[in-house]
Length: 151
Image (cartoon, rainbow, N blue to C red):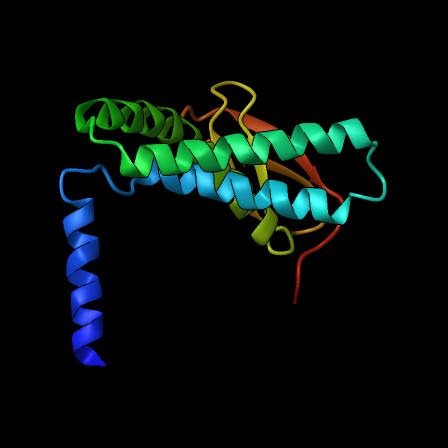
């Protein structure tokens, strides 16, 4: 049995030799594909038929692009596409991380922007009106917290 898997592994690696394989853009396409599948599965009774057909076409297009990029022999072009995606994703990632932290720490911390320099600040959640100072620009401003944090 082990010999069978060794042969299968050898044949697969021989087939993939000179082909591009997987990268971060392919991972993003796969995640989007599965999100569309789940979305259309839950909402198939609510959405009109033509919207479901459009979503289905989009799913097929994504899976075709995914396989095309994986098995492509034009490695240079696929690397350029991946670099372009990473430059876009790199610009979005800090903002998404900030929003995730706001959601996760909502019971413990308050997130505010400084009115002068727009720095993103985090304060312990203590109910009431507070006077705070921005550590970046030194400007004092007032903020109100409407409910207290976890004890």
